[in-house]
Image 1 (tube, rainbow, N blue to C red):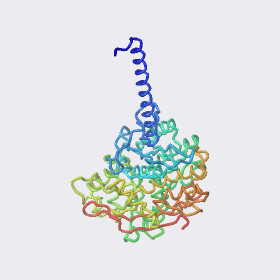
Image 2 (image 1 turned 180 degrees about the horizontal axis):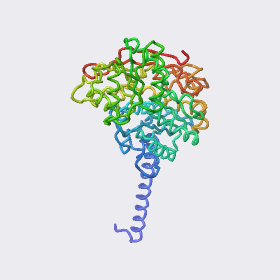
Image 3 (image 1 turned 120 degrees about the vertical axis):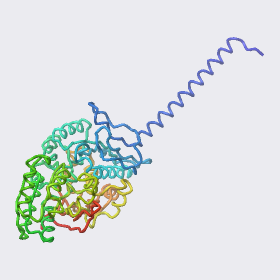
Image 4 (image 1 turned 45 degrees about the vertical axis):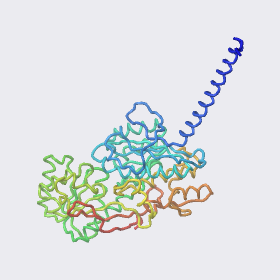
Length: 473
């Protein structure tokens, strides 16, 4: 039967209304789903090349087991860690915007890949615990104080509340006054200059690496034990180089070893001044050399070898700043044996360090040398736990808790274990990936462990011994 025209119109209107309501209901469901997904996804680090200061995006990072090439540009920073897929309720007000501040460009960039991965692993594990959420921002110093200051300005604009950095002691010294003024705590995993121990940092600078007041002693002992009699000390003329060289000199003299000459390193490895220094070393008759460069150390070594003052001519000892698995490739990519016989020291995980970190790090960043990675991991965890203890992500509130995280309470070794103790009202003593830290009042470890290393004929770095020392003797 044919319906009247007004009835047909009425039914058409009802159908349209029904379809619109269904569409609105579907859109609401999609919006809710997207919002939930966004809340469950940690931010990737923002593009630091932008002149603005955008908040982190919510793009899912690549799988954690991928190992990127060493960072060469701030336009391609490593990804931040992810939050848990099913997070637990977080501790309100203790989530942190965390940054790392390392040389992502320049000669030292290849040395910081492990440190970055250490920070990333810490952030990943903290976020997976579901108690706090950490957002991670990259920062490039380029081993240049001006670049570091500009990057710090960008991080401040992004409301960063804690920093893991810097790699070089000289860069840290150039930033400390600014950190005091802006009340942002920074923990370095690799600064070792003795000058930082007594610097007035206002309580905003810390380090998980041990002062070179200990590393210099180890270098002096190795040379004495190897039978060195006359030693040249060739050092970079800054706080790091001078401080380490002076400690090593004092230890050598205490061991009855003669210092043949004490030389501030000429800053151009290809220049006439450095060639003159090499000639003076040959004429000194020294049997051993402590070589303490800053950046470009491999270029200096190549010149030493060409001038018959290389490891085949004189026993060479190096500190951690030059120790890497691929040193030979930068010295002479055609001859791995070019670095054979070079010995040295580098900070190492304490023998009583948390037992599973090495395997966890190898799974997260396969093929990378540990180096300072445990110290970088610990720095990130300490900042997070300090905020949790304070019940606040305001640096002015939680900075006073940093030292206490590492001493005097119930022993704990992993973030989640420590965080649960904090939530139960316990005082904690975090003994982490780099070992028992036991920060002193000036915010640095009271003991340190070192690997004694030597390069073999294949250019491979081998650990031949380890020692542990205390700052109180």
